[in-house]
Length: 360
Ligand code: KG4
Ligand code: ZN
Image (cartoon, rainbow, N blue to C red; front, side):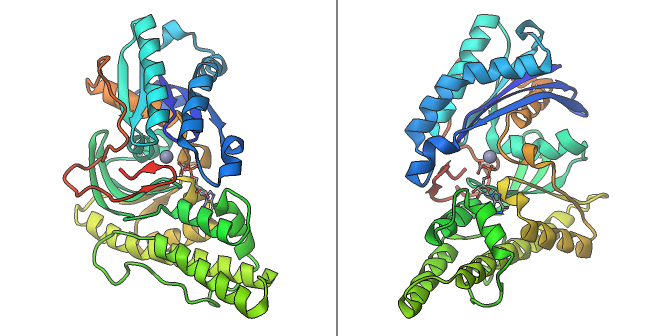
């Protein structure tokens, strides 16, 4: 089975060719064209600019993915496209493009949930067995999921406001560091004292696996203002200490909630328990090492897929599409773009919408 995957739900225009079976598939190509420069002046992703840029670039990006894979369009068995959740203009651009291609070629069309794409990535990269535990931590998402199959997910908890990457980006802006905030806060934190500022550990006092990051960002803002009022400016060391303290707070909260998620997951008694991470924040070395230590203590395997497949890409959409297609999943031309699309409809809806679109 050869699948063309298309992704445009946020600020990456992506296309990929994936070939194989639901048990074992190869990524023949994965082209990702970011839009960072287009949004740089605005301090966040501007939905209208993102949607137009996707509409302009989807054809060229798809042509590159086919060329790099050495696959001609007639060899493609089906077209999988992100149909949500995300910034609606971008999702519409991708869905309309995929529909056009499906109509012109007569190929089957498969609408894929972007979060399912992330959640199924450990199957693509490492062929891991169901059920596994997934922590999705990016600029747009944050949730713990038990993944049982291509359309069988239980959400154990998630953020009730900002995603962690969003909090890193906002903290960086508050401290005058460049975007994206995650890597710059991490670099600055290396020379900082994580214990100097006692920042809050939101929602740790509440049971369950829900998280909150917006208060943490406000605490960074208050601390910065207090330092500026006292010293007339922010010293280099103050900034490093604030970054280190912020990063430690995020890592500790994620790890504490991951401990609860693991306890919950282990009640299903999988023989080979596994926690996998996905999303840009999974690149953070402090967060990774906290999570990996927790997994060692809990007797759970820890898996962080290669970063190019952890962050937004179309290979994950192609692979999720492949799994759905093998299960008989196929959409008609009435496939619609959905700004919100929870993976687990038994759970109450997540609140709020961040800079990267509505929370699923
Ligand atoms: O998954 P991703 O590329 O895109 C979406 O959010 O959809 O994640 C990007 C996010 C940004 O908010 C960025 O600041 C964050 O991941 N990030 C990091 C690091 N590298 C990227 N956050 C913390 N530490 C990092 N090293
Ligand atoms: Zn994503």
